[in-house]
Every structure is written in C-alpha cells, then in structure tokens.
Amino acid sequence: MGKVPAVQRPIVRTFKARFQKEAIAHARAGGHSVIWERPSKARLVFPTPAPGDIHDFGAWAIYDMAMQRWTTPKTGPFRGLSFVWVPRDCHWIVKRRAERDSIHPAPTRAVAFDCTDCAACCRDNEVILLDEDHERLVAGGRADILKKPFARRGSDGRLVLTLMKNGRCHHLARDNKCKIYAVRPNACSEFPMGSECCLYAREDMLGLLDGAPATA
Ligand code: SF4
Ligand code: SF4
Image (cartoon, rainbow, N blue to C red; front, side, top):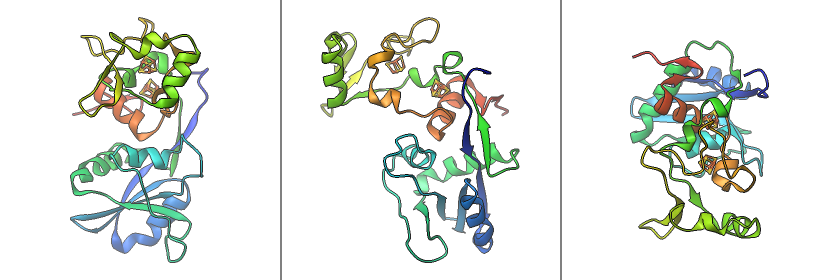
C-alpha cells in the first residue's frame, strides 16, 4: 500500500431533517450527507463536482445508484453544494454507506488501495466499449479486442468486453495487472480508486469493507 498515492474519500453520514445545518457543514467539509426529510424521502448532499473532473467522488456516488444528474442550487441553504433525491430502491445503499462509515470520525478519510492486490472491478463487470475506445484500440493496433472472444454485442447493441468463465476479464493477468493497460477502455481508466463504485466492488467481490474485513 505504501507506494499507492492516497486519496481523500468522503465519509457518509445520515442526519434527521432537523439537523440540516450539521449535514450541510459535513458536506462543506468534504463529506456526503444523507438527510432524511421523512422515512421515505432522503436527500444526498455532496460537494459540487468540479466541471470536467471525471474522477469526482460525488459524481461516482451518484453513478453507483445508476443516476447521471444532480442539482446544484444557486440560492438557499444548499448553495454551492449539490444534491440528489435518493430513489427509494437505493435507500439501502445510502444506509449501508453510512453504516460502513460510522467508525470514521472525520468528514473525509485517506485511502490508498493497491489495485493489483484487488482487481475487484475487473471481475463480473461488464465494461462497455465506447467510440473513443474503438478509435484508440484500432490506432494502437489492438482491433482484435473489439471482436470475439474479447468482445460481444449486448442485446441493446452496445459493445462490451466479455468475461472468462470464472468471471475475470479476459485481459486480467494472473498477477492482477491489466494486459491492455495502455489502451484499456475509458470505463476502466476513469474508474476512481476509493469511489463508492470501487468500495462496493471490493465489498461485493472480496468482502472488504474499506480495507477491513466485512462483518455480518
Ligand atoms: S475496485 Fe478499486 S481498488 Fe480494486 S482494482 Fe478497482 S479501482 Fe482498484
Ligand atoms: S480491460 Fe483491464 S482494467 Fe478493464 S476490466 Fe479488463 S483487466 Fe480490468
């Protein structure tokens, strides 16, 4: 872990609506705040993603719930922050994040996971190949990656990387290094270590809860 540069990830906390002020302070300090307006309505508040920052942890916390957009109020108590209303079928996700983070006292936490010790996101993960990937792979002399057995077209017409029978990506070497690292798909190069998607993959695949073994 020593050689991996650390990143500061947001700590997720839940707040009742009457503690909105504290929730806002937590988000302004870099954390993620889940404010329960009522038991069936939760707002996730987070620092506004910087334009063009493809690794922003707030944005990836939203992508992890299959959402793409957020609101950034220009006035009012949330001014300068961003938020989404958490879909009801994702309430368990934000509750789980807050439960995971309840042992961490500060609004953010430094993490440095070695991807070659992990490779959780290179397993059971359907990587979509975009037009940019197509162009890069062809230019890099690896057009073979766009064809069988390495890629297939899904029912929605999108080209995706295929997995081996054991669920590992075809391009994942035994030492967990990516065999096509220099030309790997955008979905791989943009996936941020320490993001909610990364934490979920590690928990789901490896039973690791932010570096510590998960408890039942
Ligand atoms: S899940 Fe996270 S730590 Fe593991 S390989 Fe992917 S980005 Fe790296
Ligand atoms: S292409 Fe490389 S980085 Fe992407 S999932 Fe496969 S092994 Fe992992």
